Length: 308
Image (tube, rainbow, N blue to C red; front, side, top):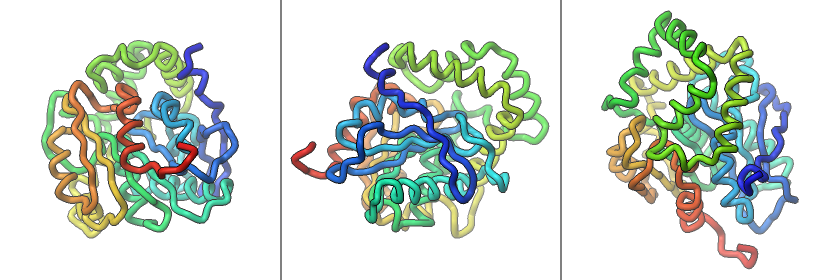
């Protein structure tokens, strides 16, 4: 096994007030001299999306990655709310549990990719006391620009149409689906280790047996797209302007799902943001360039201690 896969920690099932959540966590004893962080995946993803990055950060970060309700190994949310705000409530429960288990009184760092970035923003807005710093990797924040990689999403979100399309797509062999997703999300899908690819295929095959898998995907997509039309007080870019924590926003120059021009808006809207546009990078920088993302995070957030 590769060093990366050797660090794929066993999944844990945590029972929280709002329901059960599956997580992966740093195996070593908690350390008080490093920061704690929670990682939140994107639409259709899971804790496996963070394996390469947390392997890079393992010596410097007390981390927990989350399967959002309905994704990975986590069961559906009890209240059926798959919106970013609904997912945020689950992540808040995880953060509080991390603090309880670690005996922490200080806030933690929150890292989100794509949909996970939208969820992380909602968490920060609702409970700023829980968040020390916010890292967004290709966050799915409102942008009306459609490109070759995301033009199909509004169609997939249509009631009835989405169910038909997703059901048809699910009949494609899991290995082909994973290959297509990695190709769409990266510039060079060969940068994703083979062992991680195999883990993704196995997870996809397991999820094909779950009766709620399609609903979790479609409902989360519809909930996310609804935020793009939101003109109320909870609209994402308005929330961004209220964030007082330091922010690291990372965009891929070749991302076909989240327009890289969103980097300029993130720099304008977040009061304290370091925004990085990575060339030769797609939608999942943490999988394609985990060493670069780890260095950016450490430069932005890591405390200077004798242990680092």
